[in-house]
Image (tube, rainbow, N blue to C red):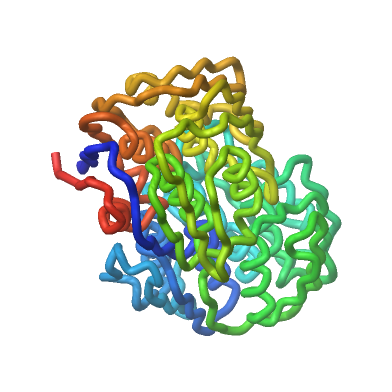
Length: 428
């Protein structure tokens, strides 16, 4: 098991390139199940979750080529070519699915193309309840018969039929799963209260390139007209907006001048607005954001509430909380997406942070000089927040259980080292 050792209080300067988005790559891979022809995915990041999906595909007899050996520091990634013509099972087993929630995305494509699926109830980060009931209700509305037995979701359908589906709450993976299933359903499907994230739009564009008929992706109403079959295509994975946001916050916290490249600034509007509010200068230039923070003055404290896209993302809440320990007053941070996403608070307190949690609200007192300490990562985004805390803390910070970090950040310690951080990975 690895850990990170960080010597803090060093300014960051230079360029850091953003990798392809994990949350776009995984549904793009799942969509390959909808056709027997080659799907070529470019700019795929080298991440533990992608490796797990490749392993799942290989266990199902799905051929993948091009992923092994991608350098973790190569932001542009390489290509994966996926072909399902020799797939020999419709089951996604527990031993793989338990480590990654996004593996549930194979459910819709399997049922749409083959009329059956057996997928283990998924695992992933312990950041609160993320039930698959909306996925199941969506598939049932399309005519599938669903049962849950011995920890597995069993789905069968002779032919899915289009329907109107209104989600009670916004769900990204639920929208993706139903959207993929509906591409091969008979008739028209309308998804109301659909998620609007850029990853939804990216998946819809891929499906259209495969021959699907989809309108409204990126809005709260998505319409899918079913077709008889889909074909192969080539897709570029979009930049990871959460990784980009993490580096923007890291630069703002540590100080200096950092250009975050290979990103889409339009996907970061809520964060960039908040950066301006706290007094950090961010300049958008094409596909990059230049972050400047000079001097040692405290930032301006600002409150924040997480909400579905295009509002402030829950996946940047922990990182922003660390930043607000450097504010000049008190910040109130409200988490509305997940009920258990303040697990990083206990570790930040070990470093001297003054944070009080009341239900889904964290009250952060600023003007805090963090101190290095042995700390432990609890989930993917918490890991990133602890790295940022280590960058600005006095002395040395040791972060254990960083396998969480490897699920969503490609070569973070190497990227940060290149812009001035003193950070290394060691085996323990």
